[in-house]
View 1 (cartoon, rainbow, N blue to C red):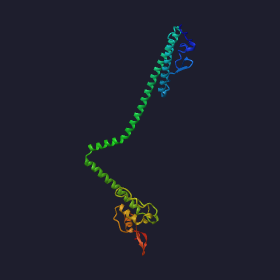
View 2: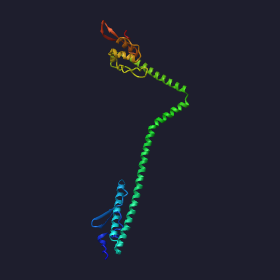
View 3: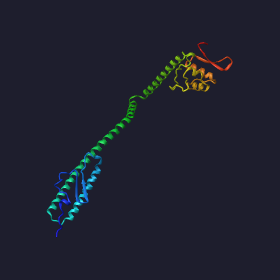
View 4: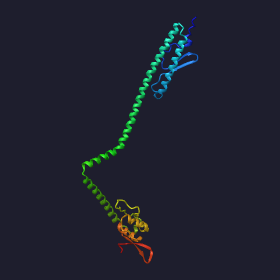
Length: 272
């Protein structure tokens, strides 16, 4: 005797009742087995691989259950069972097609996003490299042009003229500073002392800021100052100080007062 065909209402859902609802489906083949199949949404690109894996696993489970169901009822000749199995198989094919289309769309979307990001990164990198190399390229091109277009003797002459121009500017500055320093008097003790350039174009670190600081310099500072400005130095503090004051245009000399060697005063040259 053939086994009684299972009732469609208790073993599987009707394929007709939900054939149009493929976006979210739950199929039950027993009281203990529920399988949900949800096709991917195009907006969830960050979870694409997870969604695809979930769909594949659900389809594999559904296919296995269907095969076991068919094996269990292979001896049944019920036309109703055959129709239901055919309907389930058709729905399974539709779900597989939906999954395939969704997977292809997600892959294309991911490729577009990766391509756009790659172009943006490459463009930024190229811009940074161009900016970093621009100065170097320009300098190399200018140097190459001068090597080929300008004779070496002319280049040497240009460098010499440049040095002469720098010396002329330095001498002009020193001359003006000496003129202004010559106008300073004792009532201007705290007025700024005008600087003088050394031969290398710098101002000595020991250069005094005012007449008061100039008159108060110790022997070591006086000696360092005359050495910085390549002035012939003396063995005494007063000698070096007086030579520097002449050099920078100050109209004073340091002299002893009376017989007291420890007391020295600035003596105006104009009053001599």
